[in-house]
Length: 638
Image (cartoon, rainbow, N blue to C red; front, side):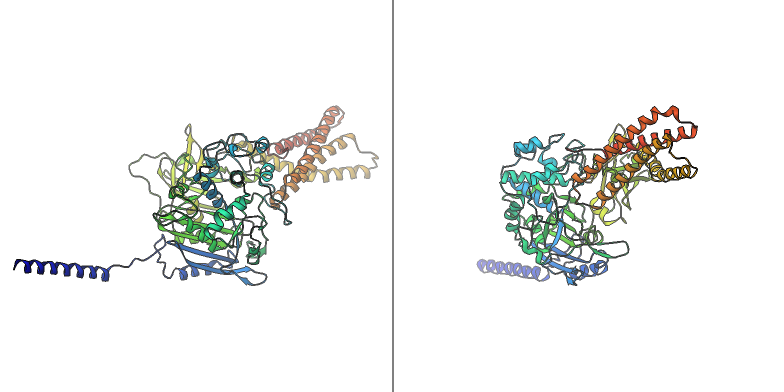
């Protein structure tokens, strides 16, 4: 009897467990895959299509979008025209210029060598470079690969010879690096300043260690590994010339909405921005950067390497930059990625490892932002409104008010002035809130910790994505730097660019332009009147004044032409700039002789008006020359 009772009890329990199991399966809530902003992936294509319909043909002629989730490409959308002139639409095989997304491949290459024990991030980079290169490479401070990979190498911009000529030429990365002369104007590790030049140095280091040209290493160790068969890394595409059959045309759109074909780019420092790829190829690359839990990336042998790759490498303050990958804001956890721009194309790659989610957007127009950052905000989002920490005493926001200049500037070059024409301004809204204004866009930030401000809602998508946090570096109670990370830091004015010097520069420039543009005509009129009055010769005072004036006029014309060429011609090598600077020396020397002759003959000038005119012209010529010296128009590179 007891046995029967036990068997019956056991049977009842077994049936209960089975029914419970069936019940849980039958009524379990299905997992709904979503974007980091909570949008269900089912039907995500319709949402992206609607968004793109508002922008395609307005902010870009064409575009391609890919979405990755859980190791798979779950959506690819193609929009608009790859070739406006021939009415060819964008398709899944359309190849776009990816610009600085190429840098991610440099950083992956670097970390592959670190994993193999062939590269140390924290030793002088010259350890890995040939002696003959190091002898020619003139740098102020030692640089490590860690400095380079987190954009704190100390280098400014070098604005000349950015692009290669259309005709094919042999590429030697070492020569290209040595022919560029960006100033290393701050100590490495103290600021995050974006540098194409330093990226090329990193790629050259990969060449020296691997024994392969960088584009060859990139193809063998990355492209082929992840299946990027429709991509090229060489600036003349020699590693995959077939991509030209599907490459989109590149465009610019003016303020009136007119579309202009602006051609293709051939990047001199090519590892920093010469990548061409399809949107699906880049999606495959991002999948390799987000391996499933417990598995390694095909790009690395050890999961610890990719974890290191996506960890902060820049320790100055709280502003962070991963190992070359921008750390971006998102609605959930950390996001990483990079944008890219060439003359005629714009791109953006963002992925959220913990969400196994990625977004890739490629467009065929230069400087596009609405699609790139609008889609990022829609699908990946941001961390929300900054909130002041309750109960923590905060310094007044008025302490950080003022103008700041980008540290990504062409320091010491003739084009340095351009960075001071559009300053970043900080205004206090109240004791705890500031307004950050940059390049015609602005946003409000609230103080969340002492001198740390986080962006609020109703801000431009690009600021939410890239400038979501500002930290002010304070020395002796005075702000000296805005630390943003990702190569975007700003500084107060350096000692040779104080507000007084900037204002004085403007005053001297305005007076010099008015004087030396119009004085020659006044002298012509004066000479004509003298001849009409029967005077057969021109007085020595007028001759000397004419010499002074024409020197100033020559300097004005010479430098105006130089500035226009520098701003409009990215192919311009420094050898052409040098011609204009030599002319400056010649005109300045002639001007100095004219000033000496005027001083020697000063007592012979008969009227106070003549004397005053000569003195004023001499003083203004001297001031104009000093202004040009101060703004690097006499700099000679060897």
